[in-house]
Structures are given as structure tokens and as C-alpha cells.
Length: 199
Length: 209
Image (cartoon, rainbow over all chains, first blue to last red; front, top):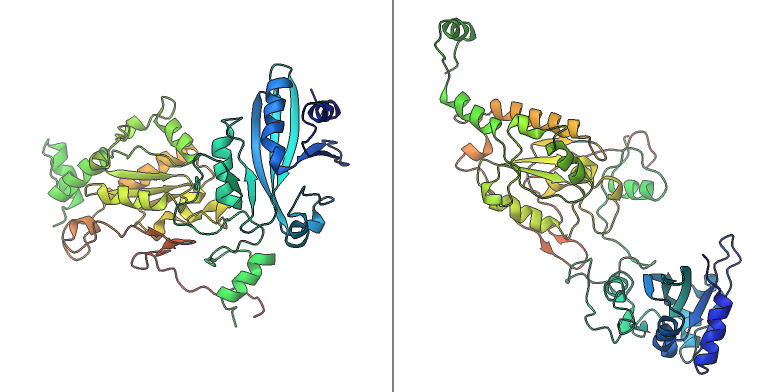
């Protein structure tokens, strides 16, 4: 059953008047709207949803890289850092919450970092949902989101010596192209660089 | 010295079995290949199925999957070898006792398969250890694994243990272990072992420069 996101938003506003939460509508066929949550109130909002609206399952935490903020929807990073995010892009973390007792979900929450560099910080929600621990480590590994307050923030998929974050849009993998029988598009460009054509 | 097959057949009909130590040793080795028990991805499911009652790899003496590399003769690389996993696979190969054989099972173990362009996928385990039999497929059916096993048995049965063309493990100068790659900043170091992996130079067909 789909979740009544408007009621959830009203509940959050009533219980946490200081929390910065805004609805982001999705005009696509899925019609799945989400709540954009300010970083400073993210943990409080999740705790409220868990304790008072029975969202007991954090099913999924995922990362999104937005190097070009113009492609993201109307950029609204709350508080300070809004201007840098508008210029330099940002990283987004998406949370999918379900309520197993009320059988509703998913409730989609989004949090955004101030930029993609040193301030790519989002508060960790491990204190509310333990299931976020490994998923936040994975996002840290592949996207480079620094989860402040995470108990054990280190790489989980790549090896420890690895630098960079491979799922970022601007990641350049080592050029170890090998023979392809039918190169085309990007692969053809690489093939031209690596293998001469028959004369 | 080769035995005249006609003479051997005549003697056999009289109840005398003539063979050579080479044939006897190769027969023993090929008839009880004990694989190392590890799987890396979905190919491992097919490998498990090949050991179960319906396909029953035990018919060919290869059902005893060993949890220790010291007791195993055969490494079945079943699945995607990630760059993070590759050093462990090479280390396990080095720990196996001679004679040892490797089957690369499935597209990923051969070439990286559908994940070839991935940032964390090795483009074939033959970059670091010598592969005896490759089994294409994604994943190969259990019958294909059995076919690969039979191919390996045939290969072992024909092994030369002495002379100029003897196999690697019968050669005192043959390599028994291979360098384990280190983790680098973006790739393994070295990314390939050039001592055992040297593909021929390839030109693109009919393309412009």
C-alpha cells in the first residue's frame, strides 16, 4: 500500500516545528513523491517516523551523484552551503522507509550534502536504524559521502588502499582496454587508441 | 618408450596388462581430481549442481571438494573474479600442492564477461595463474562443467612427465607459484603477469585509423 506522504509531512511539522522538511513531487508515472530533509534535522525526523508513525524498517539507503545541479530538481539545500551546492553540485542520500506493522511504504526521504568535496557530509542515521550501518559504508565507499557520527566509517567493497569513489559520475577508471570483437561508440574510441586498424 | 598398441592388445587378451609408469601415474591423477571448495559467483551454483545427484560428478572421481588448498588438485574458478578477490585466488593457487590444474568456468573467469568494463572486475584469471581448461557459458550448464572435467582428464592422460616436452609440474625449472598482485590506488599492481599472459598483437578489421 502506498504511503500517505502528506500526512507524514504534517505529522513531522506538528511534532518537530524546527525541522526543515519539504515535499518534492515526482511528476513521472510512478508518482512517488519524496521528502527533502535538512541535514541538521535528519536524525530527529527519522526517529520521529520510527517512534510515532511506525516506520520500523529502513529498507534501503542509496547514493546519488549530482555533479550538475541544474539537472537535479529545484535545488534546495537547506541552511548554509546552499550557494556552493548550486555551483559545484552535491551528493544526495535517499532513504526508503517501510512500516511493516501498518503495511505501508515506501516513504522516500532525501538528504543532500553541501558539496562534493570536503563538505560532502550527511549525518549518519545508524543511531536510529542499525540497518543503515553497512549501507552508509557502501555509499561512503562508492560515492564519498562522509556520514558524520557513523561508528565505523571505512570502505566495505573496494580495498582499503583504493583512492577515489568509483560510482561518481566523474570517476575515470584505469585505461585497461582489451580487445573487443565488435567495438562501437565509446568502446570504438578506446579500440582506436589501443589497436591500429588493418592497412 | 611407447608400447606397440597391437602388442599390448594381444597381451591383454592373454591376461597380461602392459603399461608404463607415465600412463599409470596419469591414470591415477586424472581419475581422482579433488577440486578446491570455493565459488565466486553464480557459476558456483552450477558447479554445486554438478556435484549433486542428478549430474553426479562423483562418477568421475571429482566429488571430494576439499576445504583446504593443501589437499586439492583442481581449482575451479567459478564466477566473477573481482580485483579485490584476485590476490586471494592467486594465493590459494600458490598454496595448492603439485600437480595442480585450473578450470576457468564461465565468461567472467575467462574474460570478465558482462562485467568486463567494470572498475573492480578482473578481465580473466589467466592474467595471474595458468589455466588448463576454459568453459564458456554464462553460466555454463553442469553438463558443460562435466565436459570441461573430461577435457582436463584427457589432457592429464596425455601429459609427458619426462623429456623435453614434459609438463610444468614435472619440470624442475617450472614455476610452482606465481606472484600475488598487490592492491594499488586504482588497480592491481601489476595489473597482469606478463610472464604468463602475453596476448598476440591485434589489429582492427577494416576500420579507419
